[in-house]
Length: 330
Ligand code: SIN
Image 1 (cartoon, rainbow, N blue to C red):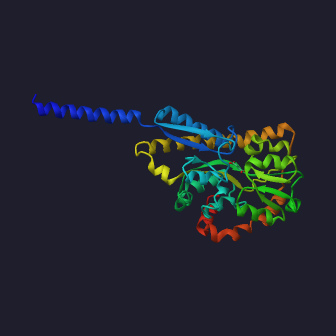
Image 2 (image 1 turned 90 degrees about the vertical axis):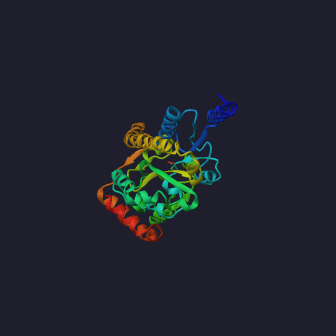
Image 3 (image 1 turned 135 degrees about the vertical axis):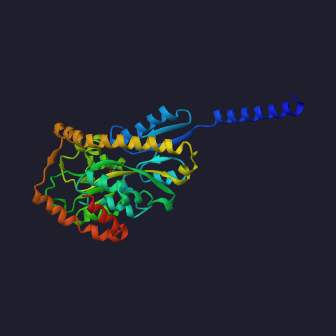
């Protein structure tokens, strides 16, 4: 072999060596997944499943760390933290996006969805998929929806008709629609973080709150709320979200694999949500700490009549087309 050929071959080998060494030594991508609920909930289980799938499939290349129970950030801070790159994935309730978009307020409209099948149909339909991009201008993109379930009203006294809620204080998530919903029945809504709800109820600083069976059970609200009205008056679902900067900065070969793991984890979380809506309700009944108030059709209709005008109030902010599509999903 000529001297120049030897030189060229050694150069090629050296470049290949450096390239493979730098691939082998590339620092793993870290994904911090922050949420506010217990691990034994649809979201807690979904986040852990995502971590497990990533460990199995991309171990070494991508590392997922899950922070439950508001350990890292509460829902009022997590999106700011995401924009600063301090957290990469979160799944706040759809009721907590008012600073980022008005369209997602649709999910707070009382008595809009008949059941979780209708919620799923809307989310997977064209309008629901369009809403995944509702926060894009603010640097955040929705990667999918995760279910928790329908909300119930818990209180320190039985709530059968709207008049029973008059002048009572209810903790709500940071949503103007939810505030309007409680004002419609003459109650006083208070926007407070999830992490404070138990203490507020226990100390009787507030009279009640609205939440799903799994949150009422896993955060022990039922131990300090003697009555739960099975109202199914609204939905509490999640927006699985990331920052555009993080997502678009992922290597092209890894992004689809991470998305696939996330989609599978969401499907798993949705199964957990459906199971927990039944099982956690039953555990609360069995505990005998809280009495379930079952509404007659006429009593429920009173809540619908008083709360439904809230739709009109927010129609312009949300968009009539979205509301019409949601109604059709029933
Ligand atoms: C959650 O389920 O993530 C929290 C809901 C709430 O703030 O009530």
